[in-house]
Image (cartoon, rainbow, N blue to C red; front, side, top):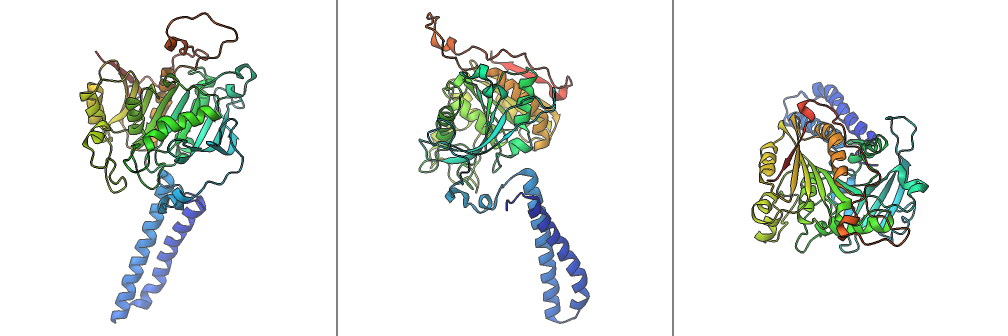
Length: 418
């Protein structure tokens, strides 16, 4: 049974309540002056506190999605082979395994419209050997005969640590948000790949290629795009790929895009930070290599390395977010040809409630930075200039998104480097 299952939460809450009831019944019977009675009363109080703390921990874990299963909590998932129930995605060469599929439903602009499908998969890296669960959202155009030969741009969505990819579906509702944006013509059709950055659980690798350890950066910048291109009709150029993440996923989104503009052209960071964290969950990420540590520090990169030709959006809150000042410093440090935009709320914490307010603008912004892959010509074409121009054809053109609100709470401020 999953750690986040409702039955597990009910069980632990029931145990905590049962302990309190038992204490009320036992306490008068343990009121004697002997040392045995005193020890028994202390034991009952410890048991009650333990059960209460476990119940609170289980409920909070289910709400925030820290650990999705007992294997995540105990660190045994890395040794478990995923159970395959539906075979391999077409053309996936065994790198993408499909576990299930379900339709995506929307209520706007009209309930019942075809809104695409959500595939539950595992993605295995050909270079790194790493494997991680994911959700792949395929827009309705993916199944339309008129788009049979088309390939689509991709947004990679990343959770925080330890997180669960399902949070991007159940908490941020990114598939429904994307489907609605497509059906209302805010954005063109796009594919989502929803994952967690923790691909070597329980270790938090901060999306680093750890010396002598898991090569997580290579997994996301090389393995995932290649596996997706082999299994689905998606683009392979950096202009076709962007990343959206929250918390640790926000840091990874910025870092992977800035370090690998050959893989990603845009990123949106919700409550992300700007240098790799190190603590007991990360271990030694850099093997004592000062240069590697600096290169994973985004402020160091802006100060000492040429700016990459990418677009980024950073979101924070003036009150309630500890990264607000660091976000302002990051925006001030950006220089051409890099471009930075900001989404600053008056207040909001480091939680899904805040990210749910930011995602309806952040996701369309990111989708509009991407270009649809160039489609193969039906007949020989006359050469028309540099190759990079050929991949910038929209599929189909979309309107600029209307702001969800016109109040300062949801204002997107664009800062271009001078």
